[in-house]
Length: 326
Image 1: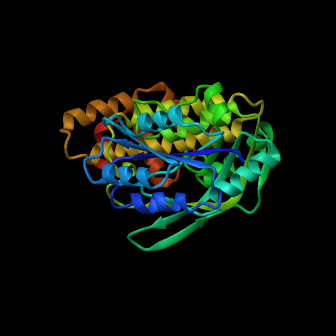
Image 2 (image 1 turned 60 degrees about the vertical axis):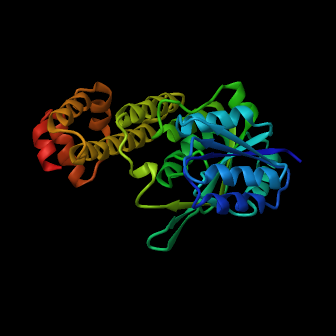
Image 3 (image 1 turned 135 degrees about the vertical axis):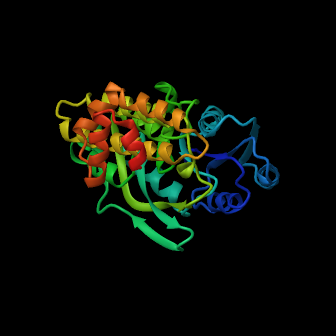
């Protein structure tokens, strides 16, 4: 049986961590190691990690100073001794057959990467939204890009690192790691790096990962001063990935649209951010509207009605009008 390393970056997750670890210990596939990487938590997370490390010899706990989720995941990869790696966020859970089913798919089809589906759990509404595909895929990276990449993007299956079983030798051979300076969009850039490196991959249509989506206290809803740089870092990698293939216009257009949407959402965050004065906001807005990379993507993006108005103002570099509008 191949060994699977499960890396859990942790930061102040005491409310969710026990459920997360228990879901991994309940795996039907037993040849696993669990790497708990505490990134300088100041709640009860460290104590929980220590308790579980004493309970099960497959668990190893590490305690770092706070350097961000990218550093924590990179550390976990460096410490991992398994043949495969799976990431799990400390506030999420996985189904009992997650490891077993996806290792079987990888081994039977001789692939270095398996993407599997997930479900959204909207905690405040207590609502579950399934996010599954109609059929599996297994084949070359060329066939995946040509026939499935855009749909997989629409399903948000490319974005996260935690819905993937990845051969550790692939990560080490190509030295694929998360950018330590970014704690937003870093997962998308990492996933593109993995896709760029594989020759064959599989997509499992079933949902195994339970993604608990909260409306507060999450990185998704936190203001990041370097968001634009992080989004552009992802975009540059995605553009390079698309250009590997001879016919890539539809896929590149999709990437342009995603990037433009991310940056416009960030622009709205800037305009509404109460910790910056107006002068600083205009300074940041000018830097974005003067970016040739962003403006080129914006021109090619397919945007809905309200975002088209924002595009017009950005292209005119009308930062003050844009600010008051948003």
